[in-house]
Length: 271
Ligand SMILES: NC(=O)c1ccc[n+]([C@@H]2O[C@H](COP(=O)([O-])OP(=O)(O)OC[C@H]3O[C@@H](n4cnc5c(N)ncnc54)[C@H](OP(=O)(O)O)[C@@H]3O)[C@@H](O)[C@H]2O)c1
Image (cartoon, rainbow, N blue to C red; front, side, top):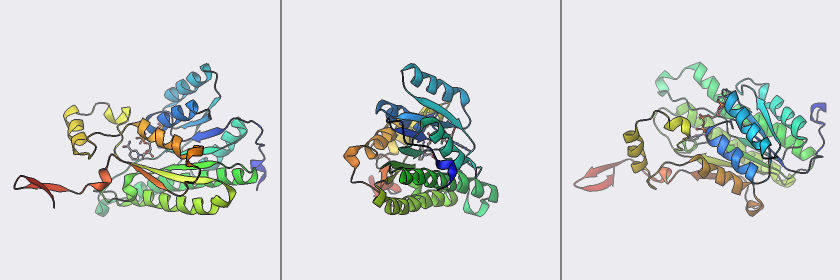
């Protein structure tokens, strides 16, 4: 273990690092973890004002929260981020790797820059963050949790997702190995695969008719909310899930169960 990791687990309240947490799903996760008594190291990249507002709000409520930033496509950022969270919070009990982006291109037109971006942000960054955090947890005998936010694309092929889907699948497979190797240390590692989650960012400016059409196509007849995902994170890291490790919890309103269908002779049937 190197000298950069010499932070003592002195503070007794648990600390969670959540990446990409100033808005959308990450923000809902940070909200829920704060309610559950975590101190929050909140990472953001593009939206400093929203991030600062969240941290101010948490502090006004008498809670500890810290602001962290950094471009996670830069290979040195993940380790710096964990070290900064440890320096500020004094310990680390939970990491939620939420930051990530979708880039969809036809396979025949996929370019090297997009591939490289998806690899760095959606696979390499969470891998390195998890590794650094787990090294510290093992060293300090913290029976913590790592949670990877992935996507239903990890499992199901949809149009133009050869690179995005592959990185999501890779992160799930890495999570399973982490879960196996960290189990003897009491560290649990799990993933959540959201389907369509309607964040304020996605809803903004969207055609309401199109949104209704998409909701109607979902088996449960609605899109998900960021809170649907946050609730699942809170459960996965709770003592109630203490026998759960290495799973990927699909939260998609049944999307992955459905097949493309067509109406033939008045009946809905598989095509
Ligand atoms: N919404 C969905 O339907 C859906 C479905 C499946 C999976 N997901 C996954 O769930 C996670 C959250 O999604 P979301 O819809 O809430 O938000 P999002 O708009 O897709 O962005 C996710 C977060 O990633 C951060 N981020 C993007 N590029 C970054 C970079 N280069 N360095 C550091 N951070 C970066 C952003 O930070 P800033 O906010 O600071 O820019 C943002 O908060 C993502 O991994 C997403 O792929 C979402």
